[in-house]
Length: 274
Image (tube, rainbow, N blue to C red; front, side, top):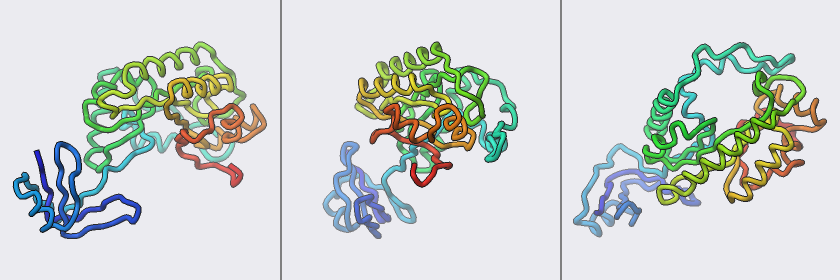
């Protein structure tokens, strides 16, 4: 099967990057076979199925390096409840809807995936707890995925970005590490490599030094990527400074979690040194 999208504008995504006008792109057996001037491509693939690309743009798929598909329901709500950027950094309340069932989480993930595809996003890193609830449905969308099972071991009742001295719960750490290992065993490399499973720490103020080191060791053992929310709130910065006497990025570096395969999200409250 060969398909040619003709009379279109193409952003190649190469190092230039090149923008080709009145161009065509040929696809053979799900692989791009040729890109070039419209008449040249049309003549070379004269027997191909054709798609009229007039007034449209063809470009590589976008990549969303940090998303929470099941949080789509919270859009416009979390923004009003975030921790303030001045003391005492206490967050403004609880999310005004109950916890979602596995079925509801699956529905939210599907909606999020649909929005991604409609925006031109074809790859996404999804970070949350208990991704296995909806992993099969998300994989079925055809997206290229990095599934990042998020873990923390800060004692329950304290939310990310809130002040206080860190108190660790080893049981939470053990459960989180098992979730990552189980998800990796089931999904990493699935769909001919379309699915990657990452190691995800929630945030510096939600992860003890012992858990950071365990996550570092697990990432090395699994030979995969990692991610974390870093310098997301001023309250996070204060927790790390008060608990360990250093800044969040230094905290990750001290315990080996800062490395070239780490995707750090947000990074809003960093010093120049960080």
